[in-house]
Image (tube, rainbow, N blue to C red; front, side):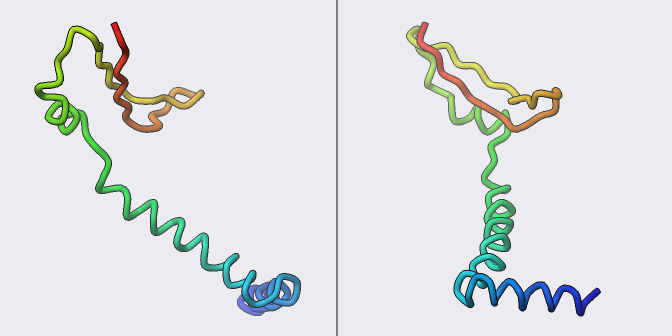
Length: 84
């Protein structure tokens, strides 16, 4: 199995060139790292309530909830301000 992975990496380098092959191998790692590094910055409903304190206005109606996938699973939290 290891031999196959080494052979596939060598063929990738031959086809793309060194720079492109490195990019093809490194970019997914940085993409995954960025996603994990962003996780602590996700707001909770309590965080949103604290951020919205003092923003009450008769001009806007605020709505927060979970964005849903087509199958009904939670995709993330949203905050939506709609003019009245």
